[in-house]
Length: 131
Image (cartoon, rainbow, N blue to C red; front, side, top):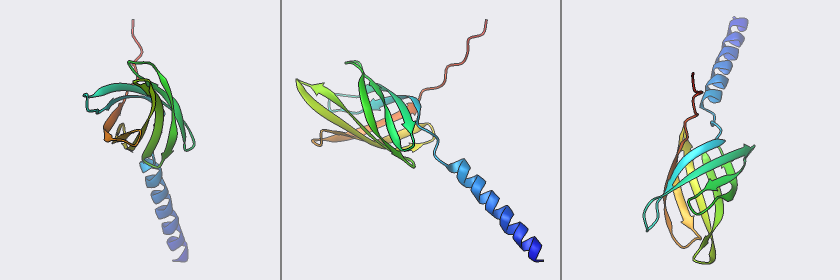
């Protein structure tokens, strides 16, 4: 009886461990197609994320030039920023969002002066071309 109990507890533990691993965060590393809402209208951005533990680095590819980004990923929360030139002044754009599978939704802060929405979808991987 004791052996059956211990075996059952062990099996339940393995099941819970597998369930936790399945629901664990999928890495945000890779390319994302993002859109940032602004008072002047939506702005598309290509985000390229690199992840090392909780450290996030990468590039924001913008129509006005690429800029480096840096931040963190903790669980399903992503937080990063990058600097842009806005009418001759440096402006820090700070992004925070929640990652849900292949989508991210959150808010962007424009130098702490205003906020708006932003979202992203993971860029689908290109399929190899067949001859």
